[in-house]
Length: 263
Length: 283
Image 1 (tube, rainbow over the protein chains, first blue to last red):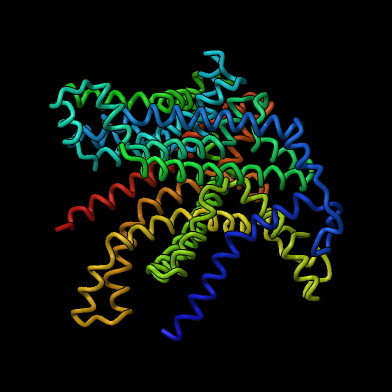
Image 2: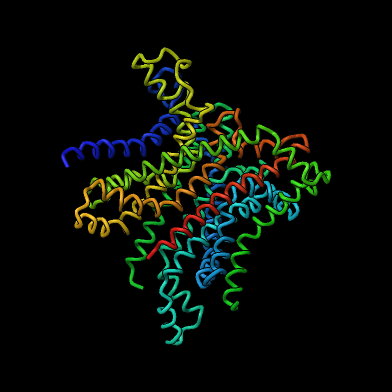
């Protein structure tokens, strides 16, 4: 035990450093002005790039576009994934394997392949280059993830509670709203988060289906990197991190609060 | 087949329909039957594209990056899950910090890696301040480098969080009692790890490991930021061809799309085959 303690302490310190140092570096880079080699710290700081993000600049527009897409994808992904996952959980034998494999396809196919394969269809339907088209392209993998997630959830779900409610005279809609959904608040919250994160990080599908006309935050970060504007790229990267962490915390908080409330 | 089965299968196929449409279109375009530069070449286009060395070096490079980053992330996740499995405060703190990078997008991780590992990045500045380097040129190339060190480290860091989360869950739900039995029967700590903990962890982690491998082989965001232009990774090569001004070369992208999709599906099939064999061993 005495020999193990230093190893654990060192590893714990390494874990903390590896989790926090990249975020710290992004923060310093987003604030540093004239931070050239070999200076270890920026000689002066500026809030210029943050101002662009919060005063209606390019980055602000991209941030709101990304947030809108991610929230819509999270909600729609959970709404689509729920019935698909539930229907799959009812299957047995080879239909179950086949159905799960079909739901796995949108998750397994590379985003670049998905985007290039779908662009012509998006053009034909008239949604290429529009936020609606980008939303639909984000929804495809998000719905696949949510369907697989709800397949696992409903496989373990005890249906006898629903049967009991029906025996007591509840209609299907009442069972859903008053019994199943309240019991599944955590799972629905997590499925929303899954879809949110899938959309939040998409680049290839946004680039191809959006055709450069739908500017999301990841695309702006790429543009800043290519232009050599590291300060703006670091600010954009941090803006990609902060809402994702906040959304994770908010969903956890909302779920824990809802679970503490008696049904 | 019952009505419920039909409903379930229809629902699953509805989710996968856009992908099937995309793959179907890519297949037709690969055969030159539709899409940009289509000239009804049949399998000649596929043969021509697959005959290009740049395609195979790109694929091999992508697989190397995926294998190395997955191996690193898996090893780290196993070590952390085994060492910090208890209920002590330090264990809980370690588990929290291990999974903290989970929601961080790969692009943000890649930007941080560029600022840290680049020729004039923070690491080079630290080494210069210690008089180990005299200038950015002395810094070994860790980004845009042919071995892909920077990309491997970035992907390993990012995927470690996901694998650690799965490993924590496997150890917490399946490990304890079996290990206790092994210890009661006189097994030493190393034997308990080799004969009980590791097999359990490996089998529990395998689906996640396959998912990470497939993801890393096909990821675009971090690769576009950190990878070299020679060899060009398969996802970058695919998008480069797809945006080429030459329509014939643009059509070639669909062959690469099928190649990337085939790699993903092969990895998943290999995993299912292994799991099927293991399932037969279950009591």
